[in-house]
Structures are given as C-alpha cells and as structure tokens.
Length: 164
Image (cartoon, rainbow, N blue to C red):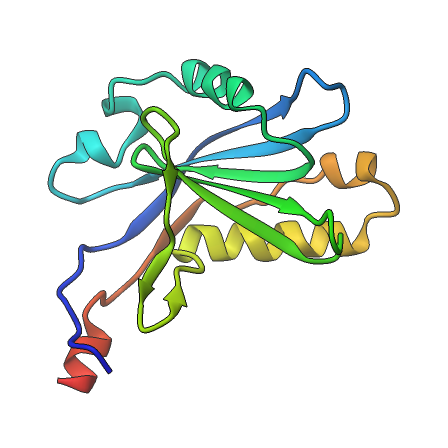
C-alpha cells in the first residue's frame, strides 16, 4: 500500500438543489450543490464564498451538453455528473469536472483505483440509486430528491493512524 498522505477535514453540507432540463427536451439532471465547511480557504469549498453563482454554473453545465438522465453533485472545486446507462441503464456512470470552467478531471487515485465518492456523494448517490430502482418511470424518478443536509466525518485521519 502506498504511503497515506494527510488529508483535509470533511464536513459536507447541502447548499441547495436545482433541476436541470437540457435543451434536447429529454435529458434531465437533478443538481445538488454541496459545501465543505470548516476548511482553510473557505472560498474554495463554499458556494456562497467562491465567487461563482449557481445560476452561472448551471448555464455552463447546459453549454457542456451532457445527455441522459441522472444527477449532478457540484462542489465549488469539483463536479461529478452521474447518469444511468445508456449501456446498460441499470449501471450508474460518473464523469468529473473542475467546477470552474468545467474542464474534465480524472478520478484516478493511484494503484489502479479511482475515486468513488466523498460522504455527501455516497449518501446522495445511495438515495438516487434507490429512487431509480424503485421508480416506474423517469418522470417518477425525477420527482424524488435526497434529503442529505449535513455530513461530518468525525476523524479524517483514522486510516493513517491505524496503518501508521
């Protein structure tokens, strides 16, 4: 196992939601805005301090031309687009972008692994996947929203302490 590096604290909080309907008339994404509070440089991790509006971000996402049905989890520093399928539609696919400018971002994390999710993404993703599984139609799916509001990680260095 590669050496464990120090990491920042983590306390994800909901910063709002918005439905994004794409110009193609079919593609639709539920957008979850999430802050990470309590870190140094809050302007990098908190929507109200980052200098970008969520409205401008949504306009950029529209210009990006994402297709399909799914959800987006947008932090001020990283955005992930999750969509179902299209091949196969029971699988949730993810693509990452730098939020500022929406340039593609790799999720590679070393030793052949890729990043799955932080706590907010995992909780929202679990809810969203369950909604997808239980919905009888896309319209039914799009009506349901995760109740994620607050998710602190109590000790962000436990693996390093354990392994060290």
